[in-house]
Image 1 (cartoon, helix red, strand yellow):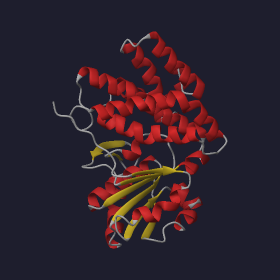
Image 2: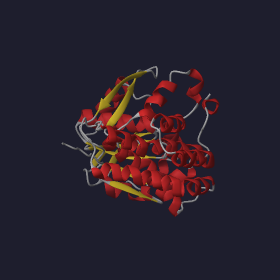
Image 3: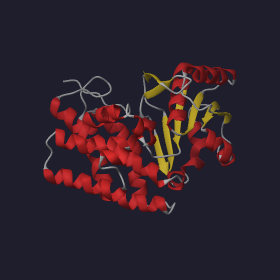
Length: 311
């Protein structure tokens, strides 16, 4: 039996972690390209510049779509700067673009998410769209990011709904990994998951149940607490490791089906995944107490529990 587990090379998290960005990037070289989310570029990029003294970074505003045209433009920009690394600063499409640019440019990549709304930052995957925003393909990358750096104060300052959506995405991790483990199904590498992957997926679930509501309260008050730190780690690192090395199952399949229904387009990925989790618990004949626990959690933090709640 061959198992495979994949990880980002380095994970840094904490209040004001952004202040360590220059020092962390200097591990990869001196010159690089920073692809910046439009909102961050227009509002807070000057703050980030003060923490980049150790490196020479060409900061470019992301055009908004992770498409081949934008990737090619940024690879050319990277090469004209003789860049040795790429930084993705912002949300999902910015991050996916940075991974793709680093891949095609054959350099290291650092991911600096400004939200904890999904488990994408740690993964070896980019979702590529057309210029019009329609899904094109998955780009499966040969390795995970070299660095993921999460500033929990930045997450605390973001809307609470985004953290809660991240909890919804992370809520699926253990149940999907468990399904793959029991059925000997493969993970994202095409091989079986390891004991480490399943243990981390289980820890992800336990962390959400114990600290999720407290983390939501902290986020609402824009403060960093131990509970918020734990849930950000669960949403970003534990869930990322768990889904990639544990495997995916019914929760995300149900999510994918929901996305073809136009009324669900106003809802976030993790909100739809959370509904998929509840449905999957019945499909897999989970004990009534487990179903009650997950339902109570969703009600407590504000995740949808009915179809009408997602359109």
